[in-house]
Length: 204
Image (cartoon, rainbow, N blue to C red; front, side, top):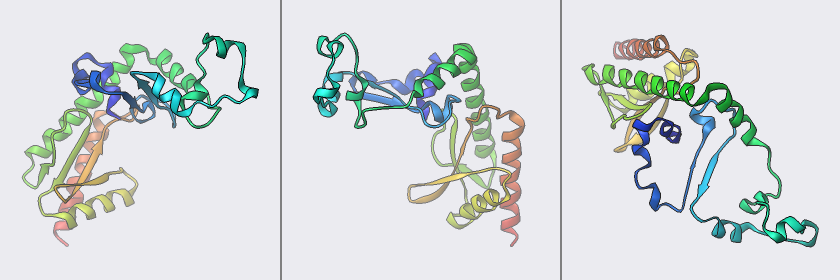
């Protein structure tokens, strides 16, 4: 998901060391406003990939392939055919432009950082890990049970949706800001909902 942040120069630290990788991929359908599914996949040396998947029965042979004048993407994956996924990404890029995409990425990260600040300042909540981009991992200090209950109650309400993970073997809540139309009011609303739910559970 986080690969989209690299659209902004100030967040390209996430790519530090990428020059040592054999391959890199990120999913525009997770944060680049593109419908599911769409993946961008880069390889440093395409030869190894093509040698792995390439098959060339007689019915696929043609002059262009034999001459090396075309790139046969059938050789880049298991299936011979593929959907035109790149077209929808092209439309997104054409619609927003680089400045529009950067605006949304920066806005989402700003909102996530604001949320992380509220968590850090609250006596009953804590950040479970650093939150440099748009994903905030946090938890209530009262333990796993109340964190799971907070998530379940909020998700059942239909007013917001939280996910979870385990960090240091502790149940941890996850809030991700990345939807196209998310605004400050939505993030503020979900924070108030989290606090209200926690307070209600604490009195039960």
